[in-house]
Image (cartoon, rainbow, N blue to C red; front, side, top):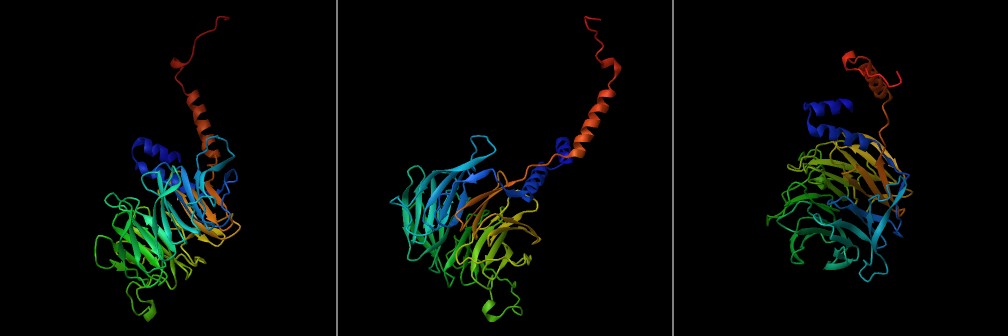
Length: 401
């Protein structure tokens, strides 16, 4: 660490290198924080969580009980032991509550005054955070598995929605209507995700084993369909041509720079793709247990070198190195299956929710003092003290003398 600081001070090192190194150290030191609790509000499993990007202070959660909770992650007491309090709740007593399981919640990317939720009650609701009343309600013919707002879009305000219908619905926040459908899948849409690099690029995953990448500006079909065999027909059976997995694809996640796309499937595999070309990078993550019949919410770190992937795996969370596939560690703490996880890039913290109705906070372990460096600095200080020029030493005598 001292080497990084010295190089940074001398201007011989990239300013971001120190930040990446410290972020990486903090992620590698993630552990369950026994001093931080999150209010237990949900009476059933937690399907989805989201942390707003404006302040990084408020977290949304949605549960199988239809309840939506907003938490304040700020520690105002400044005490070591504290609880992240639930600020407000859309509970069972509210007339606006979802009737069935909430599958996805997401903050509006530019303002905490609005958030969006979707549910198995065949609706997607746009909420006013202040009043906790829906400003807009979109109704669909089937259960809603997933929705997503672009984190960077300035020219459009489209919400992509995946339902039991094989058509992807595009809903416009400004007009409050469904303006377009994307056709190409043959089964229910389990996950949708906008690119964090280009606001017109959308990825969709389906139970038909396929992942498609779309340019929503084009009226024609998808840009390309991901192929796990990279076009080598000799390796693929007739049923596996142009498929991303050998089972339902229920998880999508772009890396922070948007250059790569991660997918998970019920074939217990996770794959990393070049998002520009659709090429399978063939990184081997081994067996990634995936028992979810619905959308699986996993996440990727940001600001680290290398980056890491956090994937729910039974009652644990598996942490993989993004580009090598190495299993770094398993985070164990839940009593039942983990369904969602969200990375907090400002503090390199991880929040996970599961069927045990708990949200757990995983925080970096504090840096241990370097005894060797401390002793060296003490010896150096003593040497400096003894080597002071006598001309500059204090030669004043006291009055008593």
